[in-house]
Image 1 (cartoon, helix red, strand yellow):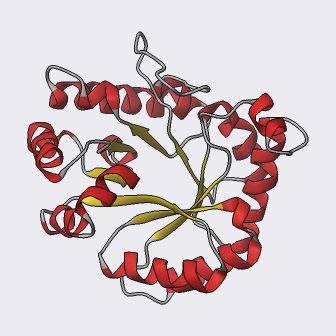
Image 2: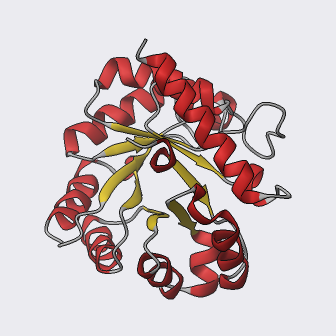
Length: 239
C-alpha cells in the first residue's frame, strides 16, 4: 500500500469552504479524507459527494450506534454516497455489527466497516466512570474480537493498543489509529497519542491526522512529511 493511502486527513473544520481550501492546499500529498460529525452536520452529504467526485476517498466517521435495522439503513445510505470506509461503535453489539457488515457487502461500493473500540480521549478512569470494569486495553481487545467475529473489515483504536490487537487478531484486520501526532505536536484533547512511526511499528494500517496538518502553515508539506515518515516506518518494519 502506498504511504499516501495510509494517511487519512481529518477534515475537522466547520464548513465546506474550509474543507475545500484544505483539500486544494494538500493537493496530491494525500488521497483520503475523514468527514466526521462536525463537517457532516454542517454541510450534509453533499460534501461527501463532492470529495468522491473529485477523485478522493472518503472515510465517513459518524460512528453509528443504534438498533441493527437503523444502522443497516444508515450504512446503505453511506454506501450510496460512494464512501470507502465508515465507522460503527463496536459496543453496539454483534447483531448491530453484523447488520452493518451485511448492508455494506450488499452495496455496489462495498465500503469497509470499521468498528470503533475505545475512543482515544478515554482513560482507564473514564471507563470506570461509565461502569466498564477493567482497563482500556482489555476493553479494546474484547471489542476487537467482537468486530472480527462479526466480519468487520477493521477496527479503530489507539496505536497504544495496536500491537496487542495485531497480536491477538492477526494480519487480516485493518487497524485505523486516530490520535496520531508527529513528534513535537500538541496532544490536544487526546489522552492516548503516538507518532506516525510508532503507530506503524505497532501494526497500524491507516493513520488519521487532523490538526498537525490543518494548522500547518503549509498543509501539503505537513501531509507529505507524515507520508514520508509512514513510508520510512513501513520499510523499517519489513527489514
